[in-house]
Length: 152
Picture 1: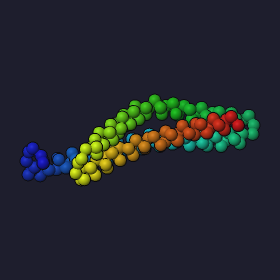
Picture 2: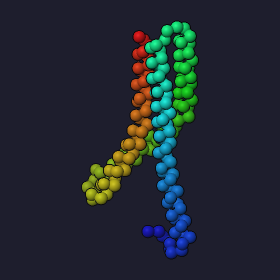
Picture 3: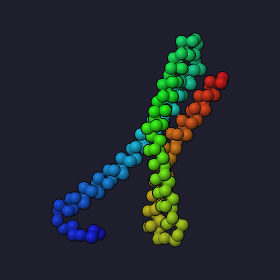
Picture 4: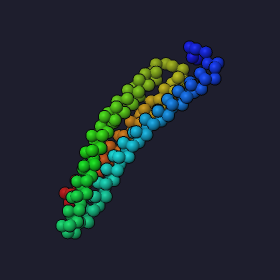
């Protein structure tokens, strides 16, 4: 399959090493999306905990602590936004493009083996999109819930 001879062991080992590194790099790209999702969930969990504290505020000192905690959460969210906005943009654009381009062979009449490979490709791309969309949606919902508790 290679345009050169792979009979020498050094060439085989070099090719094997390149393939292993490519697999590792691909796997590590998913961990970046998982890290972004975990930071979004951390912010959402902080808001949820703060909402329960706000409901049980009894005096001005409790309210001051809640305000300080809210400012800490807002600052973390702002710093996280600056750090990961382009990672999310790149990841979502890449996976959306991969899912769209991977779906092209599904439109045409291709052999079942080819279609099954591209279905897996499309599903993995969509799952990776979901990996960042779910925590972001959870954070947006928690912000709405938090403001609802503040109005009470």
